[in-house]
Image (cartoon, rainbow, N blue to C red; front, side, top):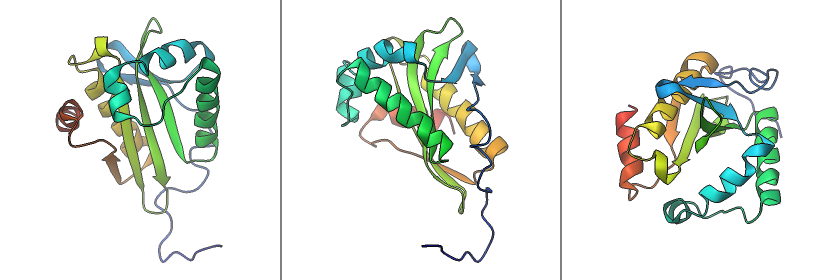
Length: 165
């Protein structure tokens, strides 16, 4: 079913899917990069953490399951539904995940979600990632509004939201 819009879309269809998913630079020498097959063990290991398990009801069970998620992440990009990145150091070490999901090009709205491994908590990794992703989404892609997908009971995540503006 096609719906009629009273105004043109904020972001034209095809604006993102026609290009490869970018690697985004973030403060502290971090980069946001698309997930790679070699990241599957680190991704699976992160979901063994009690805090990540507490706030994420969906969990991968095997590395093969993680790879299915990575394939779905690639499809999200190609279908202009979202982008999923590893938060990594220059040496490739995965410190976390950040995603922009629920892309609504008509209204220019997208969501943001993230997690970081225990060793990367409390030192600004998530804040740097949210800041970098927000700049890309708002300034380069043209979204009007981003919203965070997190529980207000997750006080650490609330601090990230405040620190990243």
